[in-house]
Image 1: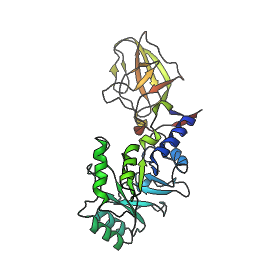
Image 2: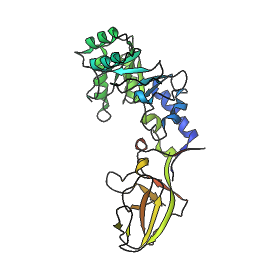
Image 3: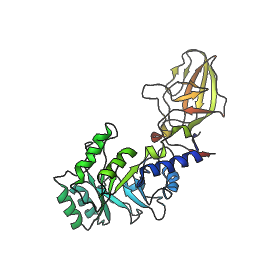
Image 4: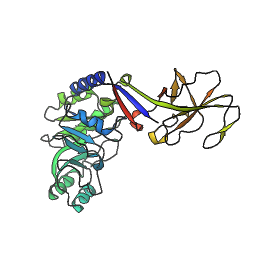
Length: 318
């Protein structure tokens, strides 16, 4: 059983290079499932793009290339793992985050998270002075500020989220921003040249051009079935004469029905119906008699967001 992602390497690397030049001051984000490619595969590329990398949690700070500084995006209330590199930068957005780090006797570099209209994490302007003072009292070195506007919505409102903070923070420290376009970054740099803006980029960097990628799963077995025959974990009856096809990808890979309930599998540009919901490492498909049936060993297309899957194999294509 295999869920495989094929990436056309030369085109993908050119996309990374062009995106890095377009934004400037890039901080690649490598978190979660590594945008479908697994984190350790992307970490090999980070050094060609930046001296910093943003990760999701303190538990994702392993596999950081030598000479690269990890910036943890999510505040922690737990003890940082002993394997976390000493150069790691943590994020704090309220007094309780600092108290937690002090409780675990952690001292090091931090960025101060600033609240945006998303209301995810971050200090308010009213609490900023107290947060800065408490950080210094805790022997934490403040190395930057960060702000995370919403993903959706008007880009000018995202810019406004950032602009509302700029007169309240020191221009001596960089501002890490997310979810802004390259043109918005140029606007910020033009209007506020006293500030250094560093751009955290994940999906747009790694998955900006889906035409370079193909997600597929292998066919492991198939069985002819009769109308109304009970099949599968739940012994559901098939809707007619046809073939049950067993594919080597399931819920353990993050493969599920689409939001509208349709099957994520395709063969020869035709959607293949699920017989039942994917289970662990296998999905059972039903193909009615007269439609093309993929042979055992064939690869069929899988339609799933790459940010939600766990692949078995990453294959580079020329």
